[in-house]
Amino acid sequence: MTAFNDLQLLQPILKALQEEQYHQPTPIQQKTIPEILKGHDILACAQTGTGKTAAFAIPILQAIHNRQTSSKLPQALVLCPTRELAIQVEESFITYGRYLSVRCLALYGGVSQVNQEKELKRKVDVIVATPGRLLDFIQQELLDLSGIHHLVLDEADRMLDMGFIHDVKRILRFIPEKRQTLFFSATMQGEVQKLAQSILNNPVQVKVNPVSSTATKIQQSVYYVEQKEKTALLLSLIKTKGLERTLVFTRTKYGADRLCKQLKKQGIQSAAIHGDKSQGARQKALTDFKKSQLQILVATDIAARGIDIDDLGFVVNYEIPNIPETYVHRIGRTGRAGQEGMAISFCNPEEKTHLKNIQKLIGDAVPEATLNN
Image (tube, rainbow, N blue to C red; front, top):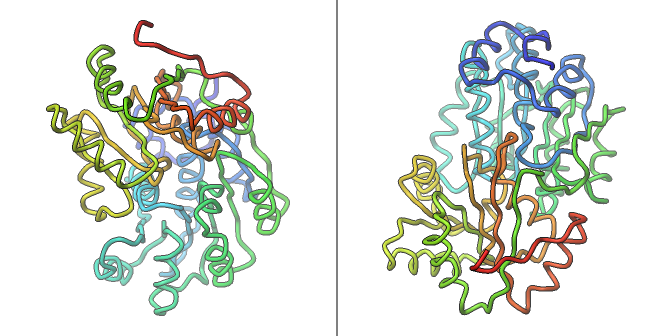
């Protein structure tokens, strides 16, 4: 079995990985790290939770360290669709590069740009950014991307879903054409393929799971229930199945807030995160949830990507998503890194069409469950 020691990585990186208890690379890491180190462009399709962030962060850190440039310009740019994902990716770069003199900074909206602007005045090697905030800095002439050697599009399909395609194309104008481009996506639909073909140069293609597949160790089930009875069902499952530290997805911000209030009335420690919450409030809720200070985190699909929580055992689809790929991303918050997980969905009569579309996408039926099983 391949170990990180076999990938010709720098000793400081190996030391950081060892401290994180990383010993064997995941399939996506095993296939992409050597190719990135060789300078190849990458087109990678892998389901969420397979270690994509480390797959690009580790070789980029090594390449920047080896380059030994005196330039103060950023050398790598990672584009992410959400603030949460940008923060997570920044944390990963910091973790794997803790023994290297490589500095990473996340730029995202929802907070004042003052502190980010202050940090940019120092030497920054890796920029992790959401498209909108990045363009703000470019337009204010506060950021020069002419020194970029590595461009990463992380969760590219999600960026297209969120309407960032035009922002991405604008950003590309400020980046050297001669660069290494790494394209990572959990799904690979038509529009994603078109974007990949337009920006990649003879890429190495990597697929470690069937397109739009769900992790095999996630136990999926669906309860058929009327909308008005969903909260009672959730409360019953929390009690009977012992749902500890559970991520619950709703379709709307209002629905997330309402469900959170109902849970709190029953004495269940919970919080909601969605687009109307401040970045500070969202980060506090995530931190409290990771520390098990909250039992339930209620989220809209803004949190379907970019939340990486160790040992998250349960995901509940309080409402079935109307975009089938969203289901894959939601339940991918559990069963990460080869661990087991449970994904429970609540389906009312109006949502049955959405469920059929999901089952068609994943190529399998989601087993029906009742309170008796």
